[in-house]
Length: 150
Image 1: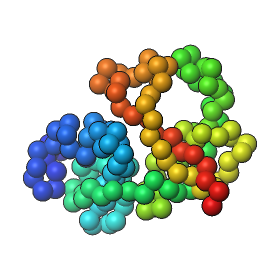
Image 2: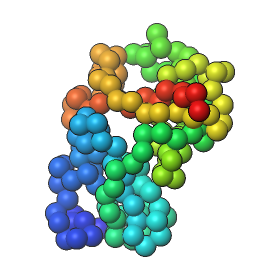
Image 3: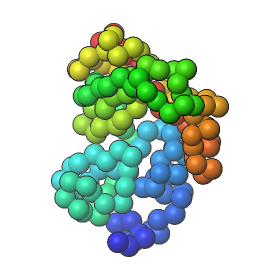
Image 4: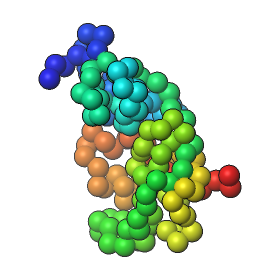
């Protein structure tokens, strides 16, 4: 696989098609996704090749921060650093664009269901979360989904 994007631009950590670039944009309040020009698949986080069809014709587009819970689970036995948070809810959220993103839901598992509306917000990682991160991830923001009334 080449280290350039579809336009021939070299991929580096500033590119939104990489995790560092994705989290840099998220820290600036922008949720970016890749959209495959060939099949329309939304890729979250973005990547240089489509996982649906293999195309490298990926465009980076701003994504909505609203969607609904597609799947969810409760974490009862987390890593030791997060044991004080347990149990907590993790969900796959289908954004209004059709892309899916996994993240923590700021609500007890029994208070959210499949199809419930959520909105993503971004926050700084806690010290416990930082203790689990690799050095290059220490300042990456954390996205959390909050239930909405609609």
